[in-house]
Image (tube, rainbow, N blue to C red; front, side):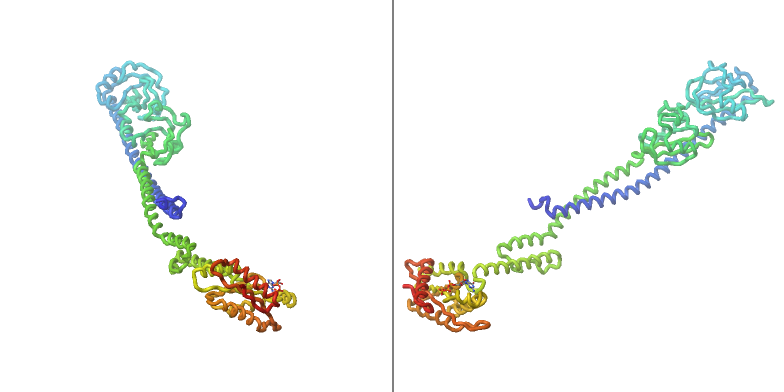
Length: 533
Ligand SMILES: Nc1nc2c(ncn2[C@@H]2O[C@H](COP(=O)(O)OP(=O)(O)OP(=O)(O)O)[C@@H](O)[C@H]2O)c(=O)[nH]1
């Protein structure tokens, strides 16, 4: 379990890299494709909004047109009925009930701008001072009906626009001007703008090309000019006031990122607009984006699980290799434990480790060799002799045979060294050791203690008398001339021999007895052997 969740492990890191890559790839693909879809959807919704506005604008145009037509018909009827005075006119208007359906109020002004009839409120009759109003002068000048700028009615106090129609006598004299008032706050006129509002918080509005608000969901803003409101008009509205029609992505007055559409009316200089918050317009896309990100996480987790098992499987040879390398210290260097035949990186690694283990084994063997042999002569060294002698002495206690220890020293070696040089002395030591090896059996041990002192442990000696024969043999073999590169020398040796005594011998004692015997041989004139008694 611990190995499964080890955070720093290669398996864990590879899995994390794969999972993060999968998460990034899935998220990027999802987000990129959704971004494209979002743009496409924005265009579709924007186009839809604009089409909707076109139909709204057309409806308002038709509504205004029908109101104008109604006033025109009314004017014609008045002309035909030869109604010239206010009381008759008031009566005439009050009989036409459909006027109340179309207009908030219908008034008639005489040519001096005084109200002579008022459908909604007779008390307004006699109110003066309308001859300077822009709709009044425009109607008089044009001699035809017009639609006023929005204004606050002096009679009702409501925000209104007035549709006018002049009425003339047969002789062409202006009798009076009819005015049909439209209450901008009334849902009857702009009701469709309320009904068609996009989304939950979207809305439609209307503004004149001069910036006067005609309709807005915030009633307090009606008749305000967008240019003189705090913060001024939003960029897209300014563009619409300058002639832009269509939809754009922008920020509404309240700071909401929205699709904003504009369409001009045909018959008046009004603009209808729609504000559709992007967060609502693109709700399906935003929802899809959230789901895509969740799906990316699920994909990343699934990929991580798959990657984990794949990595476990792929790195299995690495675990085996680690075991084998750990086993090197136990001597498992056999080629069979390494997958050296693999063609992949594990094979390369296995071969490298195998070569390393072979080199290490070789170095260890060389070290072991160095530890037990004398570097100059190749025979055993003192350490090895001590071991061998200890075993040999111990064996004699349980066996019927004895061992003989021969202790040798080259006679006058110092003089040879001094006379012929150290290198020549070395050559003699090497040859001396070779001759000692030639007189022993395989079970026997030849060792150099140091300098010109050598020791032989002869095994399996049955008779005490054999020691003398061995001593003689050694002395004899050294008497043969030593052939050096430039000269031939006569060398002799003195030998002290000790025969094992099963009761009291120790390696040290045997060496001491042999050494004493050697000393005696030297004392007796050298080139001889002495057997310790
Ligand atoms: N060439 C050479 N000489 C060595 C080496 N080790 C020791 N010696 C020399 O061997 C000599 C040993 O001399 P001794 O055994 O003390 O004296 P000796 O001249 O042999 O006299 P006796 O033993 O009494 O016959 C010394 O001169 C050492 O310097 C070695 O590895 N190589």
